[in-house]
Image 1: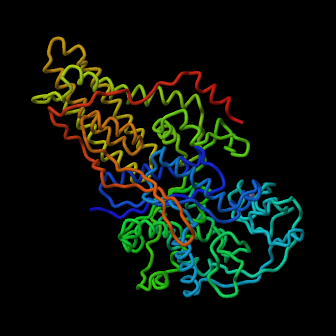
Image 2: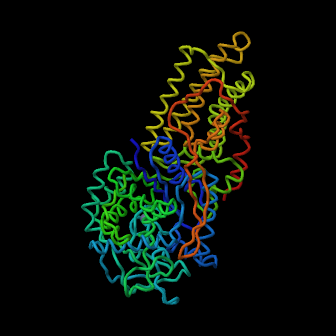
Image 3: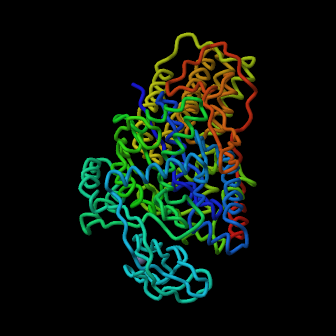
Length: 593
Ligand SMILES: [Zn+2]
């Protein structure tokens, strides 16, 4: 039976470009998962957008002398370009700076307030006397009071991952001018996480059997070690979503609070764009619907603890306030398969030191599928992994080219040449033919299960193992020699290999969609496996914003074994991948730092 699957992907902050660590951390695994689920016949929406608000964007705008709006729009354009080139099939990639997101986030705030999960409190906050302004958390840096790391941000420590209370930072300094701020009083709304704690703990306990150990450790483990406390959800900041309450002018919803609500507002925006404005409810209210949140490990507390708390707390009031409809309880996240970090040549990736492989820069020299392959083979699913340029070249040449690309190319070229460009009629298949076809068909179950459980590396390795099996079959059958004495036998071997490759092109398609699509076309199909990506401009009260969409209409791929029929007309094949020279790694390393 078809399932409703929400693929919720981390929202990139519109204050820096995207590198390979970001890609393998959340964006690529989400796309592989979504492509597979669509092929398997499930109803998928994959949503995300640019995180336009908050201090990451205003800090950067102040540094480079632009406005936050210009700053966000510039990076947003880059994201749209990269995601198209990389084939990330967002049903909607939008932004948080949209009319619909403002409305949804404000309704969400009011729903939490109605349900009694918000309270106000006067608090101390860092204030810069020189600039006569309060400094939001990200404008303050200092020493982490948990681990002693001396470059912690006000809201979170990048070294130990702890969420921080900015007022407790040791040796605080203003990010604007390095001056020492002073504590002054201001009033803010708080989310009552203490009150939500029993529900959040129940929610996490129900997921103990299948969540990744690190995600459970950073959510349930931390709550059991230390109770949750209220957390401020408003800030003294003018770039963002105004607090929908009288007398709160000049304050905004805190970005951590509103950006996660973006998963919901993007789903609603998608529903509106597709002309079926209430359909988002199938993914948000149906108890059987499954929401998967693809994020990096630095975002675990927000998605595994606070977001389920927000959803529970808003409850039925959201629907009433947002649309005047009888609301329902939200379905809570099914899984948060957060990834660890990818390092680069043994060191932590650092954008500011240019110790990074940037997505768009990489794609100016290489095709997207080798990147997708390497980042999946190296995906930090259970521990930090490393991008190593020599390893990239080896895997490209020994696995992608030698095991998979050459298999497809030599079989297709041979068939095209010796059977007049059509699939040979094999007559009755031999035991060895049936044997290999059975092995490959088995991949739909095994690889499918790996992907469904978000074990993407194992899924890819199993797919490549199956390609090796087909290589063994064809090496043994050796139709290139067989044809000289027995064309009928050679025809059986080639038919079998073509059928196995046809199945493999689907099994591998979620990982390597571009080359699978080409291969699918060489095998004579007129309709593509997947749909198309497109960008579109949406106009609303806040102006215009560009979105990236996936249009599934033309997709006809199915997660099922090939039924390749004899006589089907093939297209002239070309190699799928290129072998890389050994000197590539040296040249690429010279670009770093
Ligand atoms: Zn720390």
